[in-house]
Image (tube, rainbow, N blue to C red; front, side):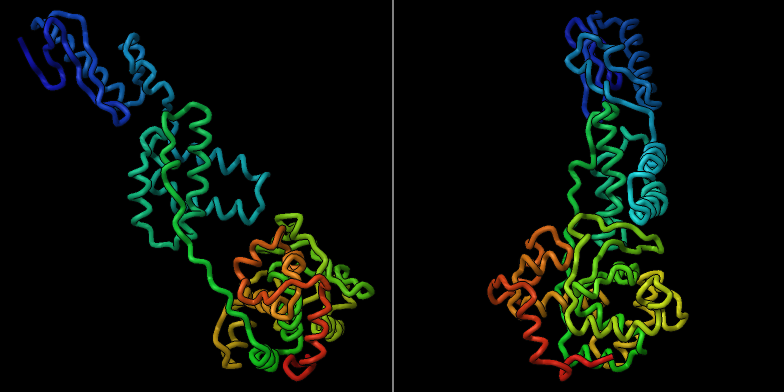
Length: 380
């Protein structure tokens, strides 16, 4: 008898046609399609569309016997910025300060500007993918930015606030791991030759212990056991905040080979009597505060002056690993010295430097050192 947009006659009944949560819904009213009943159905549809637009629509209220009655039962008017604020506040005490600050930066600079005013229920996988496609930051950074977004939607889905988790279909972007590019003895000598005494002590110690820059910054004289010839790694400094290593494997005792011991002996005159940090910034004679300070004021100028191809300071750690493995040390032992919980990372990243496996941990490097002596690694 009659037909208006989304309201149709269907035999002796009336069908209402609308979209909800991305799904096309058709519901039948057992009403004769008279002019008055069609008008009633049209008003009903208008009410439904209005409720959907303001987030108050409850499917079962209008169609309790429909197979779609539970559709949208997990709806919420909470917006993304509210969920992000709750997440960052709740995680303040559970995350490391550096991690917490990174998440807060991701939220304020990337997530809130794009998603902040959207309802959780309105965020779709396609919207997220489109946003990712427009970002100009690195893949690694994008993956990190997604972590808070993943968390709030995981929680919302678990709490029954959303029907679907749109981030569950978003895979992390591929990140190309930088290949190790260790320094050879001649390059190490050239770098040490152009550094001030304190700077050279720091770099020589880094090359022969494999400590991370954050661990070097936090190192104190009380961590050095000269009788056992080991350095006890128990803390790291990141963004001026000193913390324990992330894993138990990170808390380790690292064997001190002769070049590392020489660096410590030469450093004694500068910081030992103070009894605090081992390595100072030679420009200020105060302890280093950040890895950025080392990289910008000491490392980059030294490589440029020495004429050595630039690689970041982390390559001193790669140099340590490749030296030990090339000398034939047990990869399991090398992994423990570097703070890895197993040797999987060693095998993956340094496989080409592993000639065989030997059980006399440390012995072959001692022999290696005695052979090259002071010919290839300069005294500081």
